Image 1: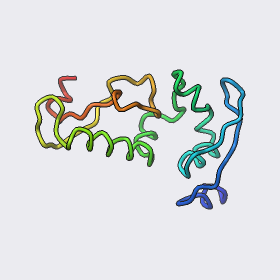
Image 2: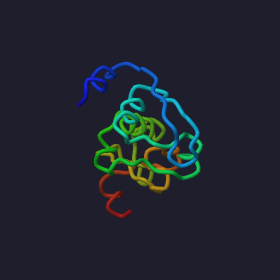
Image 3: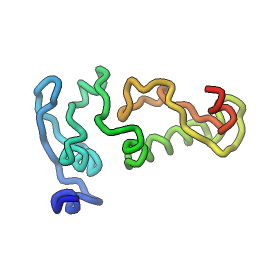
Image 4: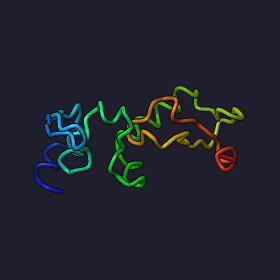
Length: 121
């Protein structure tokens, strides 16, 4: 990890770059986005992401990010910590209904499932 990346951990210092798709400049909105931009992993603006651009992280790397932890917790909260198919209290997993917006999921892109129901899907 570079000194610049270590400096950003735990705080947000805005970082700006040009979008790889449309060329417009965009600025990080939080410390995680700033770290990803500096590491070359966040390379597209919000407009292009909403239009379907995906994260450049591998799926395994993405699941380790603070953003995914936040999205996972939000999905669990919205499902009231129960499987959305059988209403089981757990153990619970978060299933992507679509990978179209991986890294920029909408609430409807995720569903909370118990392990048994997740195997079915």
